[in-house]
Image 1 (tube, rainbow, N blue to C red):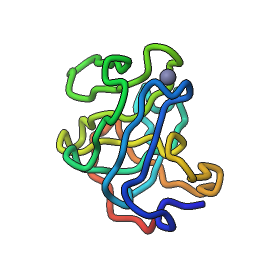
Image 2 (image 1 turned 45 degrees about the horizontal axis):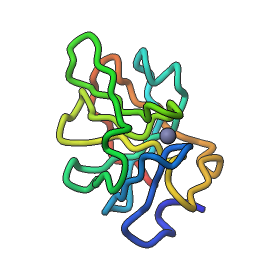
Image 3 (image 1 turned 90 degrees about the vertical axis):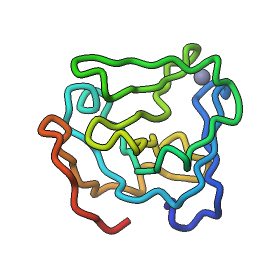
Length: 129
Ligand SMILES: [Zn+2]
């Protein structure tokens, strides 16, 4: 199922379930990113504003990784290692959300996903969901 077909809030979790979160928007602009970390993960992420994401359980299990400019912050579960979301370098008012962590979302239903240019920090046009 695609995100647009789900009711809000969207619920998500890491693999082991220690970290749980809710997203209060129908995440838009699903894409992959070609920056040095995202290209190694290969995940599909969607966009939410900072205030639209709430960690509902297991904040203490979240840890994060920063490098280079230290603006982007990639969060993942300390126990299972699953990346759940990250604060963007291209727009620090936004999170990228790992759509594969969302309940009811089939990440494989997004088989044609645009690729954002994270290395150039370029803004992306609005794309259909
Ligand atoms: Zn976990």
